[in-house]
Image 1 (cartoon, one colour):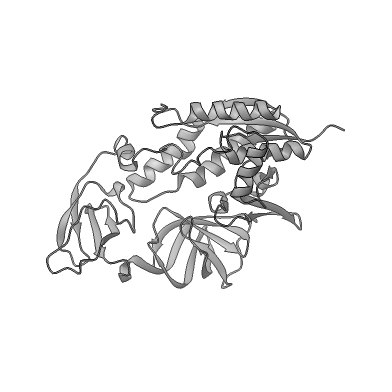
Image 2 (tube, rainbow, N blue to C red):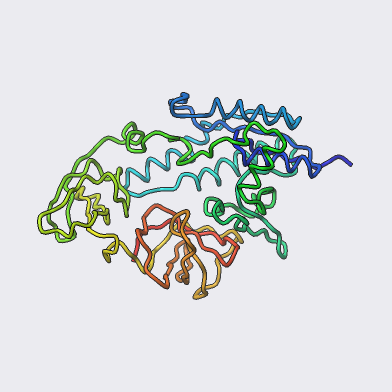
Length: 361
């Protein structure tokens, strides 16, 4: 009987490299697949795709597996980047990495892998999957500091059922050690950061290429004009850096934070001090709900929720689970709950799913 085939998303980083290595050691027939998702200004200055492909090829050669490069640029632009721009233009702050996972890495990639005759796909994400009573659960990774289940919150049963996460029980230090011990070219490679298609460039400079500046007044909640903003899409709730407001006569001397946007009046509202009550919300309203189990969780139960990555789970309860909408009520107010971002709900280590934040309460 031939070994089952698994197609691994080889990104050219250390995590996917070790995922492929571990699966090879477990006896799978492993095929590497490198995804090219971005074409605009694909230069060495901003985008590392050429270097990443070279590194992925070096790893594939070391492991003795075949590597295929696939172009998903059109799918990415239509399914992810268009949404990204539309949300920013509407004054919200989207999370394109969540959409990239559900639409590209676990949809376009999965479809392509199945066309190659794969039994499974695998990635270097720090997360886990298990089957319980015929349903698949998405789990947090053992390494809490690297857990990426937040970005995988929109995966479906069919996607999870075909997915392997070889790094689920490993810490990042172990992953690098394994890579070094086996002579993988990516062992010491720096982790990529930020939104994939922006890379290391300044976010504001990137956004200006697609959304023109539209200056307007910067005001306090009381309506006092204290400055001018360059365009509402360039700011996000809770932002402190880059606002351009100095000390005000009679002010507290504390830093200023963005607390609201009025798209109709083109005004940006700012407040002073991290603890200002308008920066903290006891609840939120979310839409576009997605529940991994295929059905909503029960109401008025104690869960944990994140309104952004790298945030501790905040105790909460859920209500109004209908028509793809729900409300999250927190046990304690949360800082800078931001429309457009995703709220992701957990029950212990199990990621239940979530939705897109529409408003804070």
